[in-house]
Amino acid sequence: MDINLIKKLIKIVEDSEVTEFSVQEGDLKIKISKNSPSVQQPQIQHVQSIPTTIEKNTTKELNLEIENKKSTQETSSKKLYEIKSPIVGTFYRAPSPDADPYVQVGDTISKGTILCIVEAMKLMNEIESDIDGKIVKILVDNATPVEYNQPLFLVEPL
Image (cartoon, rainbow, N blue to C red; front, side, top):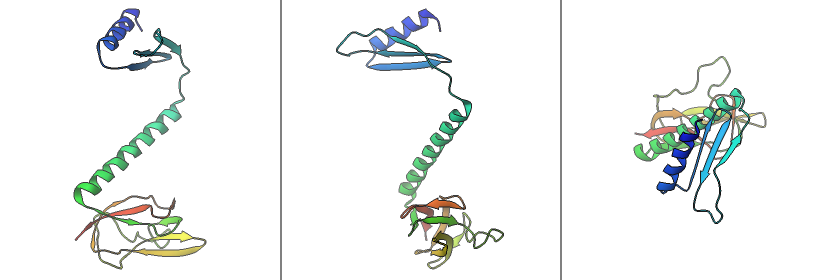
């Protein structure tokens, strides 16, 4: 990174309402702070590069957070109903590994329709719908653990 660019960054931070700014380019990391009790010089640190697998996982986690925020926004904007797990266990979409799933996105369901199974302590507990509606989103992957009261499906009431 060019020293003139660093000076320009310092000037921009000084002239703006921003109190702290940091940027990283390769192994070089620059952090500029202002309005602190003691006068600080801009810090320039060399950092080790992060393994690609961690970067991919972080990106994946960020994408999941964005999807979760989107699903929350969808829930509030469309008035969707969440069907939640009544117990802790393992979520299964079908009665057996080779069978078709109980429901798919877009299916119309009625009260009492079996939606999935949550296995707890070797017992297969069928989870039924408590409303009439249309499946908008399945929030849990097949054969994954679920917690008590964790949303499993988003349903648009009919």
